Length: 216
Image (tube, rainbow, N blue to C red; front, top):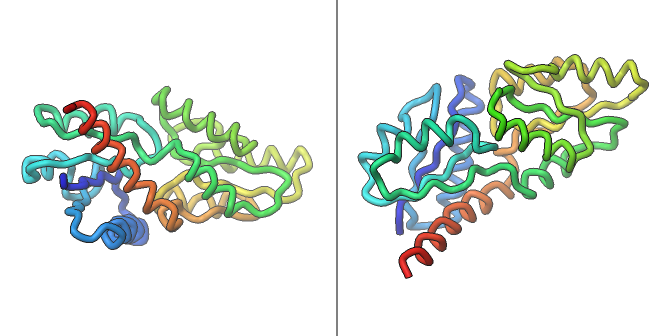
């Protein structure tokens, strides 16, 4: 079986790093015998570009929440010249929507918090998820409006209980700022949800099926 080459964004947070390692370890435990390797698109080592040459055959699974810059550029550049298929990122996906919904308490208003980006594909996926959740959108970095500003605006409009749906895979600087944004609750990082483990494997298996059909 091809190696499952997981590619996370990377974070400087020791807690966030452990959450991603634990996710990959859980995937490995659920599929004994499958070679699974973890690499990163940014911040941490080893970068995917350094791992690809050391792997004979692989399916690349982005542990990312949208097909933004890291998928379209960093990962694509790393696998250029190989036959390694790159799967869809983890998001958007109903599994993530259900995970966020499960952790949302009864609230007058929900703010979907996501890392800021100017990538139009990424922004469209965030807006679609917000529509599914019935949530307002706020960003934790690089984009407007800011999460804290959205929360404050909802308070002024009369919301008594505001919940933040954190569209972030692991803890890091962005996640920690959400606890200072003035909301009543914040959902946990998505990597902590056991439902993410089969989602990673489904991405891998879908690539195998596509490759098998292409070879028929």
